[in-house]
Image (tube, rainbow, N blue to C red; front, side, top):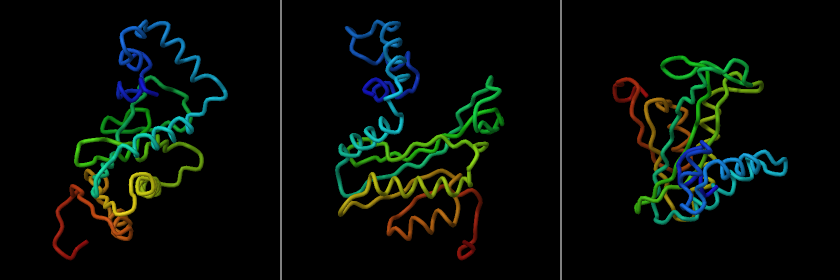
Length: 186
């Protein structure tokens, strides 16, 4: 996990490259990491929960920005992956990654939410439901007694339901608008 956080990447080769030089025999380290991840006793959710906990405890201050983002993860050569759909401006096969990062005044980051949105997955409800879950999870993981969260998002989150949910939590938001509106139009 240390390699994933240091590299800022899910690529095994980049994780290994971020390790201290005595541990950088890339082939052997990558092989060991693949072996670890393929162990049936290792669950991705448990690893992710640990990342949520460890990174959130590093946050300090009374105000934390929660950066919401939805980014395409293209899988251009994929043909038969579960839940794959057309994503991004190019409409390439892939998924979208919905994340919520906490940022404190000192510049420390914490992962509040990360989920691969698979539009073609059986049981997928809607993107607004996914966003609702991300906001709730970020509030639970990054908020705290006396801590104010300010949600910051791009125009993809310009939605009255998002605004209503954040306001109902007693929090604030800054969202780039998708289109111009007149005051009172909503």
